[in-house]
Length: 102
Image (cartoon, rainbow, N blue to C red; front, side, top):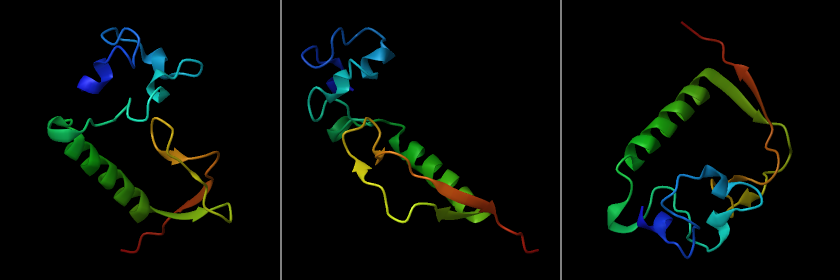
């Protein structure tokens, strides 16, 4: 997306450099909207809908095949500042394969 090529946000934006997101540099955190995973506006990622279908398929298979139980008693805080939104710290889950009934 165009946002990933702004030189004021990303040093040398046209150079392939995955380390720019790593600890110590974290160029994606230099401004609130520096990294937008699927882009935004009129020209978002063409694969966005396919990616969401893949995630839903994977989750439906996991929920169908396994019983899931949170090990901790409280829900973890959400880390909205990370490149991929997820829990802050550990999120431990116990899982057990479901018994198939034929």
